[in-house]
Amino acid sequence: MSGTDLEILIPKLRRFARALYCNKSDADDAVCDSLEAAMEAGQISGDEIITTELWLFNALIAGARRRFASDGGKPVALPASVYPTDIEQAMAGLTVEHRAVVALHILEGVGLEDTADVLGTPMTDVRDTLDTAREHLANSANLLSTGTPTYPVGKDRLGSEWRAS
Image (cartoon, rainbow, N blue to C red; front, side, top):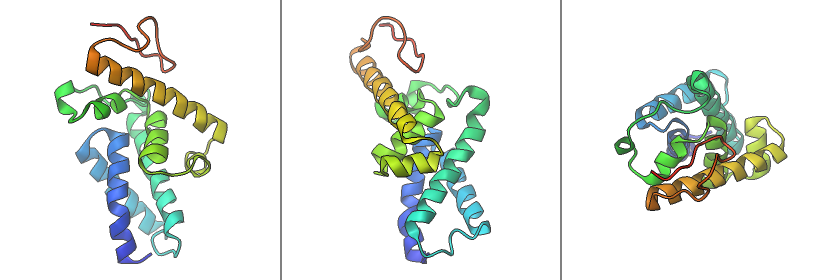
């Protein structure tokens, strides 16, 4: 991989990590850690940028899983004022697995098959996870904009309570 390829890849990795970590500083640290791990594993010297890119996405997901394991995959709750946009606030309510699928497939445009490969799960699980994440994001967006959840009674499939405040 050339220096130019790496220059193109770093902004994608930072965007992906920010979606996973919901914190710019932690995300940048994770990108540095994953790039260092890739260099040590000999991944960055390869010719295939796509293979390297997927390997780095996987390294970022593994780091996020470790980081948030004690919290059930969710980031530490921060005040709403910390999140610059409603979508970042809604993403913070997803588990690491759900954020990873949304970030890989929707934000980065990685196909479902490659997303399943990166996560090490069957494609049917990726589809189910994506559906659940979309439901949660739609409900969050409606709640944030109108104060009324899309599904006002009970919980969504992530177990989040939805009640008008």
